[in-house]
Image 1 (tube, rainbow, N blue to C red):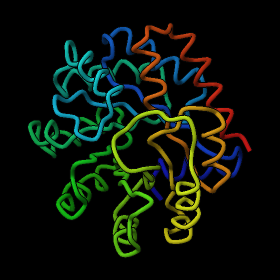
Image 2 (cartoon, rainbow, N blue to C red; image 1 turned 90 degrees about the vertical axis):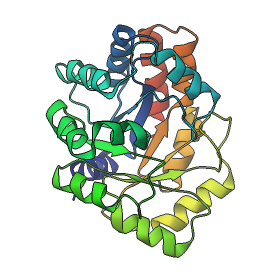
Image 3 (cartoon, one colour; image 1 turned 30 degrees about the vertical axis):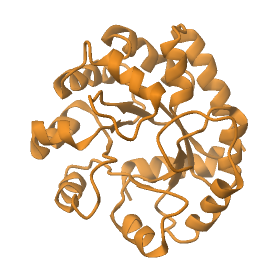
Length: 264
């Protein structure tokens, strides 16, 4: 079993569900971004997802797009993201997952990218615009480098496609709670909870299912965990507070409140 999957399953046995907050690397500055990452860890993050700033973020809603625009002023290359991760790793042991578009990876080169991931301490990589059928070679190389490759599914993913995703995904299956781009919303609907229950019966027990897109409150986090999700991912609700200038200690408190929703 992949290291990330093993960690999530251990948390499931002990404490309910894993909590996975997201931040855009370099937002609003590299120094401040490091402060906010520290806040996520102090708030109880089980994994941390870091976005790679990109100029054409097709899957991102306005909040994360704005964060990417802010971050690109100082974090316009993958090398800078890796430098930030290196600093994070000097003091934080929480597993790190990069969320990136494929173009920056392609520009650097897949082999060099994965080498950098292992060298700097990246535990997983999500590439939402690289279809698994086009990314077989990358996924296999990532497995060999011990870098997890979570893949995305939606409530509308059909059984055949879900089986393919479950066979190729490592770390966890990322269930997008609703169609469209990222963004916080007030509640989690029946479509999402029923999709969690259905998908959990159709993927291997050793592959965790983590839910993201739209989670913004402790109640929303609790609802997806109670429906059977192994982890909850919160991005826009945190990124919005960063954009509003919240202090790191305020972000830490908010993350701790969200994390309480995973404790069943």
